[in-house]
Length: 264
Image (cartoon, rainbow, N blue to C red; front, side):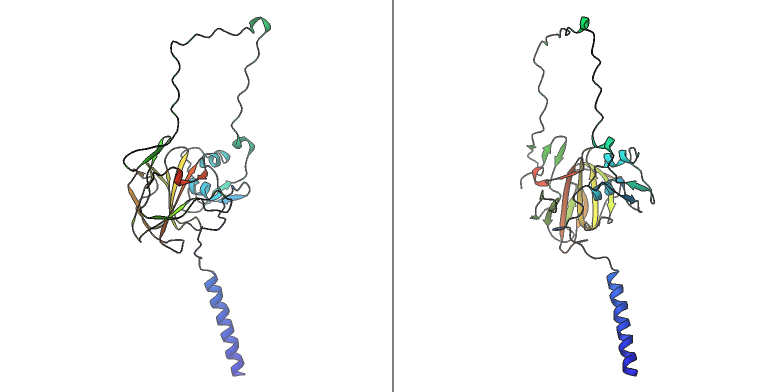
């Protein structure tokens, strides 16, 4: 009987221990996993402490402006804990409203108006062809990019639905992580699974960049930063190795950072 009681106690103890270990937050590596790469267009997100509209849009594959418009949240996109954010895609936010065609005139006035002949040909618009400067930076449109960290690129961007949506740069623990372009910090936290300690910078209305797996984060939300400014130190938060996971998004869609960074 005594032996039976001991066996039962030991079994209960093991069950309790397994339950405790299961409740621990797992370390999740975003590489090789489908981390909501496709846009989520149904359901509702309940805002938690520390989240911003930018981080929620990032999580679900939205452009922050589109998500704000879908929820009647104007700039500067302030949200509050407990607020409900709809992820349902509304038809009036997917395409800009078409402009009505001008009313047709009567046959007596249908003759086209004479247009003045310009004195010189109109100048051609400046193209967005990338140009590399001599200072280790590359200009694409209105944004001038530079490398966010020193090290070796060990993982590259993939356009597949389950592929990685950024690049991984290996390096030493606590080595500098710098802003890849001028911008403003719009998210600082660890609420996105697989990213660890994450910073998101807004460079203009269309361009955002993200810096994941940091050890320490040296800037706060709302800070204005300059390209090359140290914003974090490299670490292994949320992953298995010391690295910087770097992403660039244009209009809410991931793009290959290697197309915008200068050649090393």
